[in-house]
Length: 302
Image 1 (cartoon, rainbow, N blue to C red):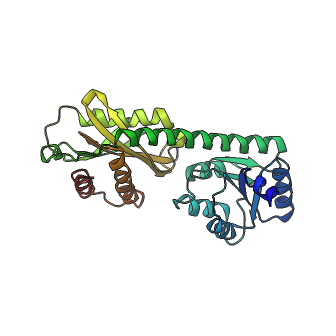
Image 2 (spheres, rainbow, N blue to C red):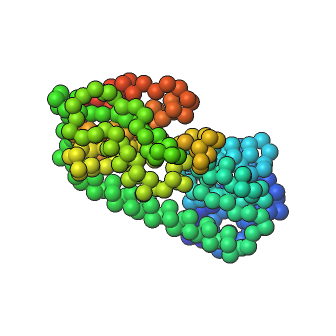
């Protein structure tokens, strides 16, 4: 019993592979290097395994070509689930043409490892991904604790006068012109700053943090825009677009307001993700509808 408890302290890896020989060898390599390993033979079985775990694996290693549910559909399914979407995901596959790798990157896969692989290369990539995940989790925890301490006295809602200063914008990346404000609401109003300039600055600031190559799934950020004395919350996302230079169309939805608390930003993110789904589906986006939801949120006492 004690031995099992000690083993459980080691990082847990889910390996999804339909070839029994490869699966056996992977399990042997990982367990001999102090990893816990759970296995599945296809994406459908892997989802069933994940749903029964008390704690998520540190990383998922998956083949692409598998029966019932292949690697692409498996990754798409878990990346859309809030329980598993944050788990680092690696494709282990012989299918590694530039086109295949580009498609996987567009989906948001963390990395590819091609067969045949060297044991030390596999272990180095896995160790690096797990270390990076732990570092990000540690930073996020520190930020959350800091923001919680800043908000412990309660959250003030915006006043009726401030409502007119809440702006919702959409900004799209243009390969020739750079970030371009496509729409905003309200479209008319007196603001002590240029909405176009602020929208472009917010887009560029986030790209400098994440980089174009990492904008593959929704990422949000709460900002203090000092030069205009405003808070901003922005959500970045993208969708496949063969006409774009990077083969994906990057865009940003942003809220600019006199004050946005950390707690409100969590709810704003969900509203903007809902709006982003409209863009993903190529539907007409009515900013006024989503701005009204945000106004109701900001004007409601916490």
